[in-house]
Image (cartoon, rainbow, N blue to C red; front, side, top):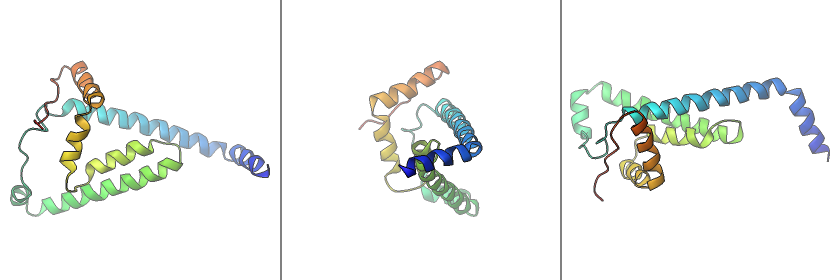
Length: 144
């Protein structure tokens, strides 16, 4: 019973901090929603069927910048995953932050995983509904 009183006292004592955390959580939600919307709208309809440049071609085009960019992108993804894990305990969009972090990481089978998610009709329909409102053509997925 004392724990409940202690929790109540802590909430009252730190109400300013909780308000700030709630506002940060709301701000992050708005930023994530806008970022996802922009990414979905700007994505080429054939993004998942066009042949991607191989690692070797990318390295040849930008031999000095490529490894730096790849390292920074993966570090950013790891930071987002760590932040997402913290947000599972704090007020915020923890799971969404983890998913966004995963999109920045490079790992084998990532493309296959993305296509697997997009083959789910609820996800694909939601994405195509957003694209339709923005007057964009629906996403084209590769055959099996």
